[in-house]
Image (cartoon, rainbow, N blue to C red):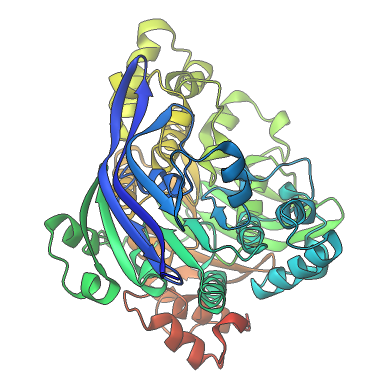
Length: 548
């Protein structure tokens, strides 16, 4: 039996706009052997996810495979019948989507969705599938693996949901898995464990994988070879070590050189100055489950406070308390020195306008039935009272700010945008209210590194011009180093350390802060193995990192 599992030749894919078909993928070739991992990298809109889906013989609505061949283990997927594809998908070919929140059925528990494929494909019965699911949850370091499967998707964090989706894809032990940004929503400590588990599964079951990502340090740990894409064209392909050490094309070299942006250190905060936002002794809970414990920190005018910590540490919950979406059980929130009503429904329009939020999951944050112009135009009209030509002019200005051509994007729906483009629309929507304070909840996690750097520069420019203050929720410590003025570290709903950026990145650290800093991937193919060895993990599938 040949080792070749997937062969793609001269793949051409088109997307429909009005009555015209426009090229998306321009004749790409791809070869993948059993047990091999191919990394697909490139900026947002390069065609990475489109090729990943085409590897399953699938194209999104409004998209078609116009030419070329996709052959999986001798089966022509382009011309295969629907019955043939149904027999393969979920069993021999699996997919891990970028946005788990948009991919799970909100009406069914996680374990019910996990067991669907193995039961329907007769790989195992439900009882065995539940037992196997618990074991996969444990391997992927989900908390309380025996019980978490019996929660609904909205009852777990974004990072936990992403790991549950990875477990679901592995449930039938497929021959091919397409990983579409599977660690985007994960904090760095959890990312190590998930990457180790994915790599172990691939090696143990001789599984082939296409690993789609914009994180070069991550792909360095996972891929045997890397293919670089730009606007639907292949730029170059080589084995991982060669690609990292000596890329030949200028575009690839530009990807390797990103994250050069670092804001200069700002002067110390004047003693006694009034913060824009101040959290005072906040306790909060979801129902009877406490999630925040005596949380206090300040955000001053024109400054950026990065709030970091693992998935479920309480970062986004603190933001929800600030916005009034989750009224705290005790404590209070001040804005410009005045206590805010804890429930957003009791705040007036000016109080609502001054604090805006950019959400982590752009796929679920944008109304799929509204055009981009309508999405951005709504807060322009609601908060600024602009209508007609003035409203359109302001929306066009906001689209220009986020580097989306107004004439091309104003009438598009969110489904016609890439993940990075959707996130930029979310940023424009927050800016539309002209607020003093913006909560940025993982705003660059869905963006490739070139676009992410541009967004960080844009946010910094807006801050300087408008005096904006940011609460920057992130698990990306490179982003923290680039843009933050102060850092708040959270764990288990508590603030365990906080201070100025330069102070926080210099030892000595709290043990948990030290763990976060040591878990940031490096552009070295041996980095993951080295870290696991240093932490006493002999089997990469048992990456039981002890989170202090």
